[in-house]
Length: 153
Image (cartoon, rainbow, N blue to C red; front, side, top):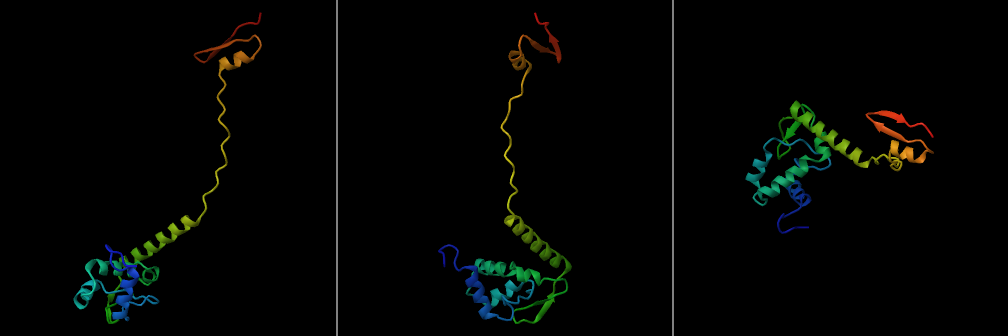
């Protein structure tokens, strides 16, 4: 599953982080992570490149379970699972908005398109000249929206 240009998959990267720091990275019960935790990981773990670390943290923090746990006042944890700050109201609102947007997108994706009835075939508008040809002996000419009828002979 390793590609030459991308490195490890996000799942492999996440397994690496959860093996090293199980108190912070638990996929079944994710806790909000301390802001700036990537700096701490960078100092303690030299195995991951910057790109790999960024992709792993993005995959973890964009999980629906993680976003659902970002409630205002919820405790953030560091790598050891110790409290390290709280979730702000703005962060909680952003997480809820993202979850709602995903839910709405999923609902519209699964909703079938309403069937539009077939339009009737286009019928050309009948003009005065067309009508005049089809009537017996009556010629109708139009000029400036006035109709003049010639008496039948």
